[in-house]
Image (cartoon, rainbow, N blue to C red; front, top):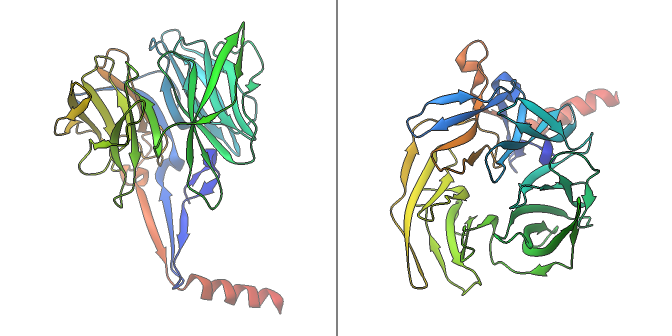
Length: 329
């Protein structure tokens, strides 16, 4: 059965009628980070097949932050792909959602009990920026690096998106008091000029990518037209990328007229599908906007064994009751 260990849940669900649906993946969910261009060409980065999550390139594109899961642990690593050097930033601390500071000096991430920041060179113990029993997930920095956008998921309530004021002294990042800020849902991210933020929202029944002005003026513009999540701005200021739920990369060009954001019809950037690891980051855009770092399924044996499948188990609770009653005898 497939599981999302960084987020702490198995990919299984039950209906009231007693049907169990579970997802299984071939190759034990193994994948490899690779470069991918719009023609569908791939190039390995030199990392072995493993259970990878949350790929995030440094602002200059020379380093890759990622989470690697082994057993019940999910640790954060920095990989200098040009020199082939890996640096571990955590040790047995379950982590998720790394985000680079705009100057490339720090990586912030979600851990047990809050949000942490670590020097990207691994030379110091991660510092805790927030403390909470709720799940707090860093999403993006403001372009000036003074604000960290994060979401907080509160049991029984709608997730809140906030901005955490931050600064740094030497090799330590410090945080102020968070403030509510963005009317957004998943994966909010600022445009390079800071005038807009993109995010995904399922208000219409499926996830779509939207854009709002910053500061928020109360209106949103839909960008995707057939589902989308994980928006990524290009640095040229004219393209917004995102990923579909069937693991394809899309792109929409846009123009700005006064205070209006005007997207064009989205188009497929490449027809190649990338590895399915759920809704977390399995791709990131290189600074030149010409290629992505992506997770690709690890090749192992029969290609059919590497596919994901959903299995339905009928009368699941009847079988559980039968087995439990047998144990009681």
